[in-house]
Length: 261
Ligand SMILES: NC(=O)c1ccc[n+]([C@@H]2O[C@H](COP(=O)([O-])OP(=O)(O)OC[C@H]3O[C@@H](n4cnc5c(N)ncnc54)[C@H](O)[C@@H]3O)[C@@H](O)[C@H]2O)c1
Image 1 (cartoon, rainbow, N blue to C red):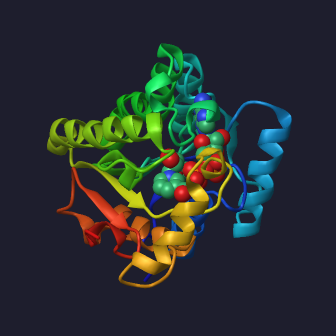
Image 2: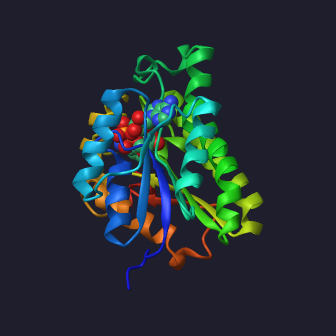
């Protein structure tokens, strides 16, 4: 029997077929899950998300617009999802935003307040905002799994990652606090710390080329991560095989975080 048969959930962050969320969705669907999606508001964004999701083999996908920086959009998505689906077993938070102007090596000290706050708002607070809204439907069916995407720049300085590193530190910490409170409802909350992958979001990070170049030299697995590596870890974390795993940040980076020099 498929590992995720009978599970159904909501995925934020499929912009196109290079998105981490696309690879996660593909792996979840391969293992038997049913997935619903959101896109950024706007016809073009929705079309891009639909086109990507259809490549996974999800016919007539459920896609609703959502700017996660707007509480009213989040309310509308969760209301529509719960009205049209009988259960919410998993929630994938694979979104982030920071003004690319401040994502260049040497630009961190100059980050303005507005750029700092919006990076934390969209990239970290939204995890709490989504978990708030997922709590009741997940509780109603005995629990669930919430998963977000982080990066090593949360812990160590990675040139060019800058304010996004601050936001990822907040995201990982938010993961632990949510896990501590929601565990009594059997809702598990984890993050995957993924290696660098060429996507729309990562193209805004000034140091991405260096990260991609250096990883195969330094990583124990001697290669860059692929979307399917993260997809596989997501399947595990969403599945009942991970029933005792919560509050964790799990590295899927070909081991590069374990290397000191
Ligand atoms: N690509 C990498 O190298 C890498 C490495 C580790 C972690 N991550 C993380 O993976 C996640 C997905 O990023 P990706 O690399 O797949 O890039 P991506 O550009 O494909 O995905 C980013 C998503 O964030 C969404 N988004 C941005 N602002 C939003 C808002 N206000 N409301 C709703 N959605 C919004 C975009 O629509 C997009 O779908 C992010 O959290 C990113 O930080 C990426």
